Each structure stands twice: as C-alpha cells, then as structure tokens.
Length: 230
Image 1 (cartoon, rainbow, N blue to C red):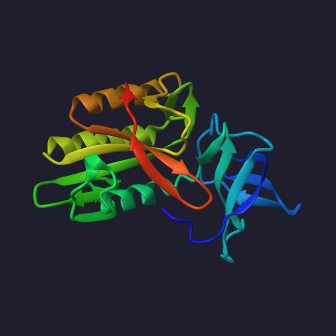
Image 2: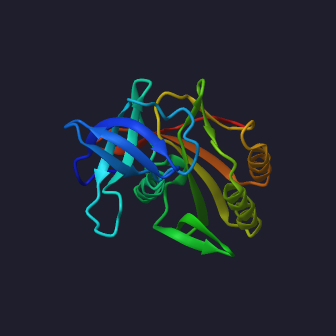
Image 3: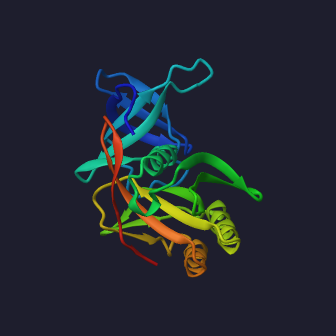
C-alpha cells in the first residue's frame, strides 16, 4: 500500500478522548489529528515520539489530519486501524499472502448472516471469508491482541465458526504493523474470553494467519507470516 500523498512529520504531544491527538509539527505548529485507533494503544504511545500524519482536505472534518504511525523502538508502528483492511485486500488480490493466494475474485465488506466480514474471496474450488484485525501491542517478542476487551471481536470469531460449519473457508487474519516482534499470541490477561474463543474457533477449523507489515512514511507492505502461540 503506497501513500498517495506526502505525510506530515511531527512529534506526539498527547493522545486524549481516544480519538484525538495533539501533534507539534516540524514548523512549530500544533495541530489536532484524528486517531482511528479506539484501543488503549499499549506499547505504541510515547510523548515526544516522531509521528506521521495524513493531511485531510474535507470541509466536513473538524480535524485536518489523520494520525498514521509513530516511531518507537527503532521503527515505525502503524496505528491507523483502517489500513490493515486495505492492505489485506490488496495482498490477497495480488497473491502476496501465500496461504491466501489463488483467488480470482476478491471483495471488501461482505455480509454473512448478521455480520459483515472485511474480505470475501473465491475461485473455482472454494469460497472464503476473512476477518482482519490490526495488531500494535508488543510484549517481549510477541505481538498480542487485543489491547482492550472486545466483544465485537468475539462475535466475529463466533460467526467465523458458523461460516466453517457451512463448509466455507474461514480465516482470522492478524496484521501486525510493527517489525520488532517475532511471534503472535492473544493478550490473555486483557481479554481472557477473547483468547478462549479464539482457541475454540481454531479447534473448529477457523484458520489463524498472523502477518507482519513493514511500515514507513512512503508505504506499508506485508513482508512475512508470523508463527502464533495460543
């Protein structure tokens, strides 16, 4: 995924009210950016850290910037939660995720029952529903999800199990937007119910595919699959 416009560089002053962040730009201007990440953002918040913003030219928007990434621990971390869906769609469409390659039709935002999944793909042999989650939390060598209790996330897992019961391929795709981790696992201490539901889903045949994305102010791209431990 290439950024279509040059990002604006600055330093984080504070993140507040979940969806707002004050940033001091390199020219000394202080702006308020929209933060798409509703989670706690554990391990990817640091006052004074470099950040990059996308300028937004929309008269209806109160904030004129969207916060895209933060530089910590020697690398950029993507915090925009809308990015992984597009990133995953492009990667599946272009066959860049080995376990999800070979599909001739790929579409975003497709409903199944009373749920809507991020991606639907098919070919002559099979159909596949994919739910995508953004992962930014680091614990040692592990990327962990979620960083806050998520009842919506559990509902997606339960619906993926229903998909699998109907003989359709069901995939939980975790996009890790940082390069300083080596494995994926659930944050059992934060949301044990989610962790148990993921174990149940995996036992029922729902596939777990964690992938790691390299983040930079020019582009974000999936570079490898990560091993996982439930």
